[in-house]
Image 1 (cartoon, rainbow, N blue to C red):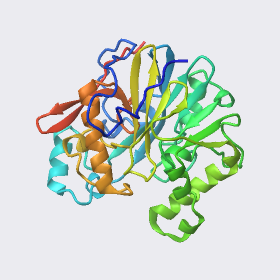
Image 2 (tube, rainbow, N blue to C red):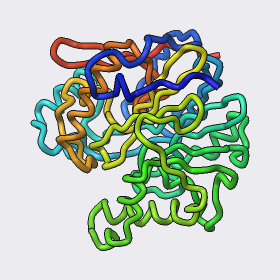
Image 3 (cartoon, rainbow, N blue to C red):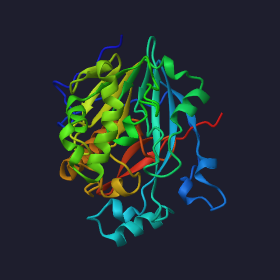
Length: 335
């Protein structure tokens, strides 16, 4: 078992260094990926979407698996307090369409000495954000894994695109032998029966979270900020997107790797404007504060990371860009 990082003395969202800089274990070369929404109309997202990618984090084998794409409509609608002209300018600079704004879903499987850990479970079969999601189970199998061998599901939070893949439509678990790890704050909020009449997306998300989490309640375990969820996986509280949103630092063989979850959704818009409010943030002001602190930590430590909604496979680093920030995709081998 590797020595766990301590946040009690050098905590996240505090001053000072946290993690030693660590390069990705696997060599990378330029991917040249273009988001599917920006491809020519003759190439559909379903045909062009990559499915899985394997690399190493220290002594751990890591595999990124796509659950497909989410269609969020107009980018301007997702950042309601931003100037639409500024949103348009950035999207133009990045050669991206204003609509549809497509977000990818990058789930991570970590293979340790004795566990097979899945971070987030995707959308499941629902087509709430278009027809190009729900690919995780097929891609898990394509990557050589049996869903029944997953020992743990670690959730960044309980939104639909992260926990709705736990249960199948027939009421059976997609990962029958997996324990589920989530912050108690997020579990309590998104399974609260009192919110079933809340209306809007909150009601919809609560209905789905209850459907996927409550049938497995006996396998649900809560973790504490700064503590190990499992050996080599440390919880880092990053609230704002949801009340109990959590990022994770993976440590193995002297290397550190950050799973940011949904602290940042769009690789272009929210690095140039980390203060912008995202439509699905529970506490936009807190989300912005968390976002900036996370960026500053990642820049200071040159910490490699994965963004759940970044262009596949979602691995890269964050650097400063004047008074703002910029996402730098990692270069990776195709074969």
